[in-house]
Length: 393
Ligand code: GLA
Image 1 (spheres, rainbow, N blue to C red):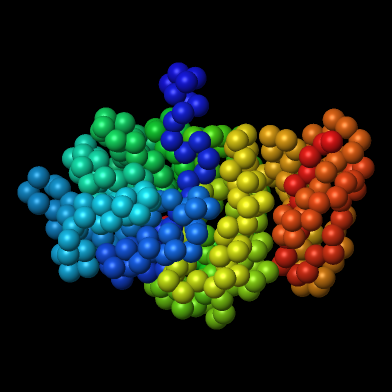
Image 2 (image 1 turned 90 degrees about the vertical axis):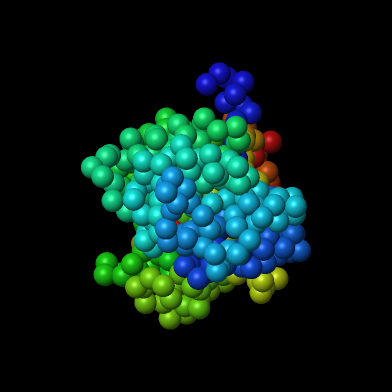
């Protein structure tokens, strides 16, 4: 890749959009996808940058044709994939589809291992702009790099720009090779569920679990424009009624609270993560829309340096994280305890470039702005996160 290409390639900022899995699970239909596309436009989410509409697992018919080609489930997607892609494109959005680097998808539908060229050509013909490529099915003895490289090569060979979203759950370190096989993002963990924390026996990881997991991995250097560590799709707005919560064996008794939703979203932005909304957009609340379109947080997620935020201080009740930005840094003060608490940090402890002796601070929740000589502090409610954008004067 030349320098020019690397500056103009796909996913220069983390991909943003909506994915069907958390909201609809394996019951997804073409109507759900059209409704989501309409809702992205009507709610202003498209304008805020959410552009990909991704159909996750279960869109395909149970059998391929004699050439191994995929087709859409005739009942749930009666007009086929191409017409659905047109519908999405007609609304100024981009269209995404799902397959797996194995014999079958996670829900047992036919997938792409050994048929990568054929399927990549189908995806391109159908107008697909984004492929989420899962890790289920029989791998036929092949390692992850070979399986994911086969689809990366096939996508590179078609005459269409397709974002390649590697969903290998980080099992064999996809952050180490994801970019080399053509990937634009790579999952770094098991599935996120609509819960703060899960116990060992439950399916999936809660929001706090994923933050812990990312901190422990220490893979910030793997991320840069064009290739993103992916902590999984957003569970913002979800709870026991979400289809994924009902589909998977996780005990979920209440929706994520407002504080949990805010901390979840703030951390995904601080990490510079892909932002794939996973809630039903047809009855989303005004508060959740405000959260998902918070311009200060989105600017942190999409900062041109493309760095991943990292922890400066960890602890059972207080954590400080920061992310270097092109003009300063974002600093997050997270109360992970159960009581309101004062969190204080000197910016020397964080990623803020300490060139001067005065800094402009913006509170990313209230939009308020002030100056500091180096001290940052906030009273933070349980499970809330204060987020500041700090720039040297
Ligand atoms: C895996 C993935 C999920 C989702 C499901 C679909 O669990 O990690 O994100 O795509 O498969 O079956």
